[in-house]
Length: 297
Ligand code: TMP
Ligand code: MG
Image (cartoon, rainbow, N blue to C red; front, top):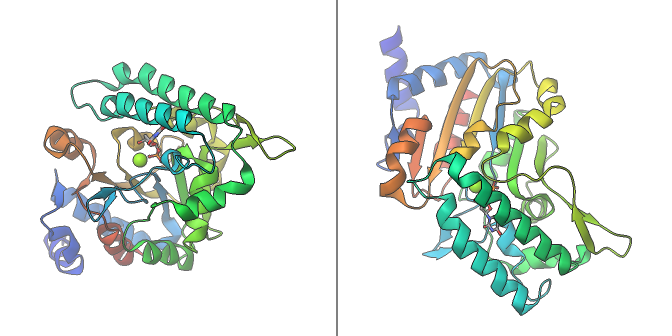
């Protein structure tokens, strides 16, 4: 029976045979997909990172902004602040993606990066009423096929948790402007706290950065326990830190993880293939997640 399932998946999900798809253990992927298919949409939940997972890494050879970088706009912050935020990006992004350093080594640097940027944004008294315009003027884009992804999950009533170390207010606006902010979506992220004048005065709750999503997941235990009748998880991410996003779930049955490998491909290929079930190399589309979802639900 197993052999037949394998063949079935292969012809049913031709997207998995694309050259940009890497798998450490193809047969495990296929049996997981088959098991998820048998359990159906009522047993499934999707957990996804936002920046560089649901949003594009690049378009026509140009980098697309993360939610933080969308604020890099004269509307919201002055030139000195823009320069400083770019300097910080140039210092810390290479640390974030450095294949030669462990997560433990990276942790203090990530805390420093996020804390410095959030302090700068607070100093600029970012205005709430200008966020939507900044998103409109930015070159942020969701991955090709995003509409199929979001609409399909809504139709099947599959809950989608977007778990982001970016900025919650901004990512909501990106999704809203693309007309896919559906009621089945829940967001865990860094949210801005505005004063009565509508100016940024602080960030709410505990800081989320790339490598503490496990702590964030455990803090939001209430959200996960509402979904305990859905033991199957499709997890999407672009950082190895994203693999801990499902750590708030007490009982999982089948988990399939899909990782976008956007940058530093040769250096990171091995660790991504060892960590994610499916690795998508420089793929700006939602084709593979969509094909899996289409088969499973
Ligand atoms: P994510 O969890 O939604 O992917 O968001 C985190 C990303 O944001 C992470 O890859 C680094 C990025 N980032 C910036 O691009 N600029 C910044 O100033 C900060 C603090 C993070
Ligand atoms: Mg990301």
